[in-house]
Image 1 (spheres, one colour):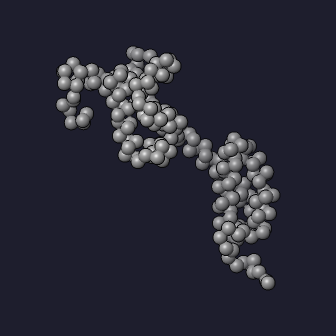
Image 2 (cartoon, helix red, strand yellow):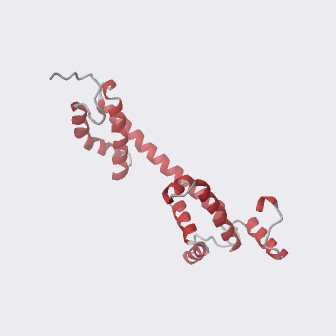
Image 3 (cartoon, helix red, strand yellow):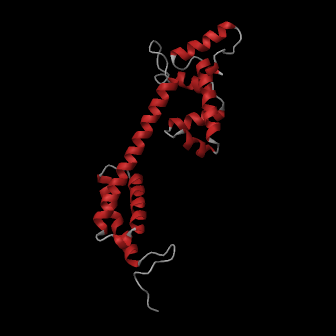
Length: 194
């Protein structure tokens, strides 16, 4: 039976020359990715993503090795940017929600204070905080913990209220909690605090 090399291949079947290329180019691409600054796992992920793109466009690529090398290096950059953005989001979130006023020591400086802060939370809330500290977004935390995005958002509101009531959090919010306690009702009359 004569097989036309230009005919579309069934799902899962790859042209033999693509299979040979994938096998023979893995090590050089791993070296290129690691020279670009990737860890072994990041390099493997970058190569895998590049190979998926190469497989999709195999018939239109004239010289696959330079194409693959450029795709791998671009993927390493994407991984680095994603990691960097996640770290920035995590830092902004932590500073916004958990730092103490400048006249008090930071909760991150003292492990005992940090543990005390976490002890104020329920186990479910601690799980959410742990995932956020790992750098995941609220949507990613919801997926990881098998909850809806709204449930995670509601839990974060409850976490903030608990920590602020316990004295952790930005100064004005903490003072607002203290003021409501002095009124005796324990409930705020402000619409935004409800």
